[in-house]
Amino acid sequence: MTSTVKKAPSPVKLPGGGPVSASRAAAAPALVVLTDFGEMYRSTPTRRVELIRQGVRAVELKDMVRLMDTSQDRVYKVLRLSPATVNRKASRDEALSSEDSERVVGMSKLIGQVQTMVEQSGDPGGFDAAKWLAHWIEEPLPALGGACPADYMDTMEGIKLVSNVLSTMQSGAYV
Image 1 (cartoon, rainbow, N blue to C red):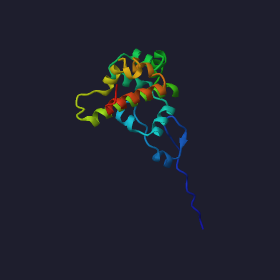
Image 2: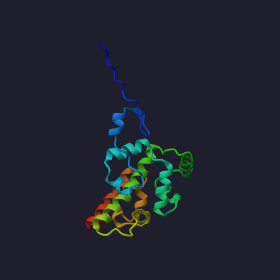
Image 3: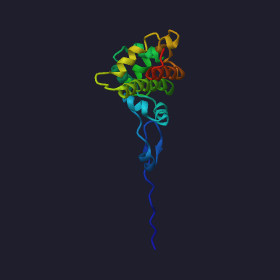
Image 4: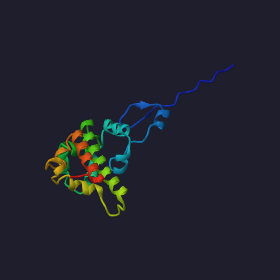
């Protein structure tokens, strides 16, 4: 009687992680793309955490800034990112640190929140959430004691505060 030995599936390497079994890789959800703002907003916290841990590729950040139609230097300053580091990592196609990625993902999620708000409110035709947010964060708001939302974008708590202001605006309770 001969016995058949089943060979284990060969390991698959997921982005930013070590080898995992083929069955686990197939079950793992794809990570959210930074510039798919609506998907970033609607995705689960678990998926966003995975992206943050993996690190946002610096070239993806540059793509996001391009879509925002504002200066890279301003976005980097608002998010407390070193332009030299971003440029170096982009030229090498490397990922940002988890700490930097967290703030970048937070900005992407805010753009997705605005996009979703407009879609829920009616016809979003011609509206560009990335450009709108880039300009809106520079405006002083009474809800923030006269501060600009950009003043809060360097921490996750600040980004949550800005998100809450956006939600309040959508509900009509904004002052």
